[in-house]
Amino acid sequence: MKETMLQLFEEVLSVPYIQLEENAASYYVRRDGEALYLLFEGTSSKEDWKNNFDFPAKPYKEMETLWLVHRGFLRVWKTIEPHVAENIANPYVKKIVIGGYSHGAAIAVLCHEYCVFHRPDIAENIEGYGFGCPRALWGILRKDMKDRFKNFTVIRNCSDIVTHLPPVLFFFQHVGKMLHVGKGKKYGLIKSHYSENYIAELEIIARIHGR
Image (cartoon, rainbow, N blue to C red):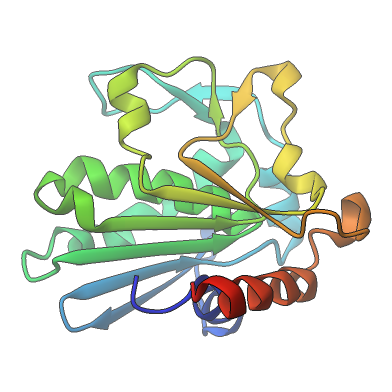
């Protein structure tokens, strides 16, 4: 991607999100030439917390392959989906970058799958980034389903507790690749999730690796 993950994360934190009344869903859309950016906001309301903890697995409908996802996150994504579908389907879009933080990172996971499924012509140019991402998918996925997330990156800072929820004990899992930043740091389970600590560690990554 052209910008670094630090720059993308700072954009995720700062853009003016469109707030939908239904399910307190929020999203942001930006076009930059042939590139489409879809960003999703972190937890910012009581409704968000309600959806975060509504984690019984529910089938993702409208697909031939049955797969199960976190019910609360699915509810929010399905609220947003019709508002971004036209942007995603636009044939002039040749690249899609998806990003989200915390609650928004889980929505980014579902958005990423939607984009890959509906835009197979540019699947290799669809990138997703989930900062402090909770687990959104349940159970064992078929290989063809896993492949849809091959360009999605979960960014975990230190021991961020949110990235360990819902627990694997309940059969939830991460998808895509895991980038672990802040190794050896002593933020603790809670402070590891703080946005300022993600920024601090992403600044180090940007200095060392330029990404």
